Amino acid sequence: MRNLTNMKAIAGGTVFVALILVLGGCQEPVDLALPTATQAKKYYTYDGALSAEVVGNVVTVSVAQDPQLIRRGGALWAKVGPYIFVFSDETHRLFQDYPGVAGVRVVTTVGGAQVASALLARETLSDVLWRRSLNIAGKARRDGTERVTLLQDLVRWGEDRTEFEYNSRYTRGR
Image 1 (cartoon, rainbow, N blue to C red):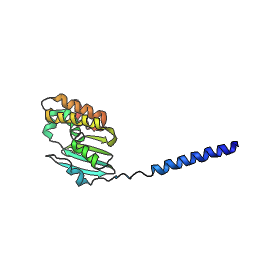
Image 2: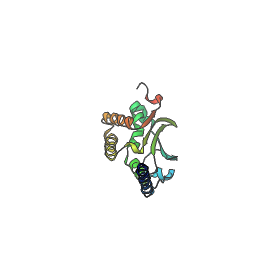
Image 3: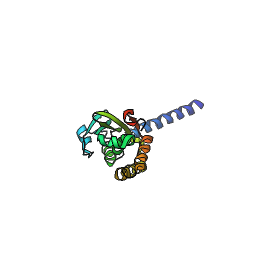
Image 4: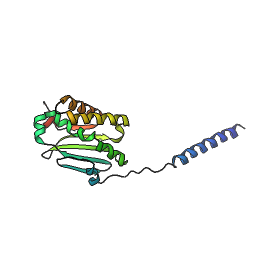
């Protein structure tokens, strides 16, 4: 009798596991399409040189910064460059339109030399944090030249939420 009870428990557990596996397999497949480099580039509007490439499931956007801005703005302007693009409606739409994109990296350059880069992973920002990011970046874009603290706020926000790298040639001791 005891063996029969154990067999029923095992059989019941097996049916339960099989049911979970079957139901889990009934989900609609997720479209993990990725943009081409050309498609990704079209998301961003910029007066200067801008290029895009897709490597694996990461979109890398390269932006040439005006060397005069870096000279005048110093380390802060060198650091803030990638965050202006990473925390933008364009990046948000790119993530929404292409579920296969795991991250967006923005690399800023001056004369071909990398100044800074920031990689934002898809899962980093909830809807609420996206709205906050867009707000912080929008204020920095609109009023940052008059209120430098807005640029500093954006850099701090970006450093807390991205994998970033700065070229010490442009950021040290300034």
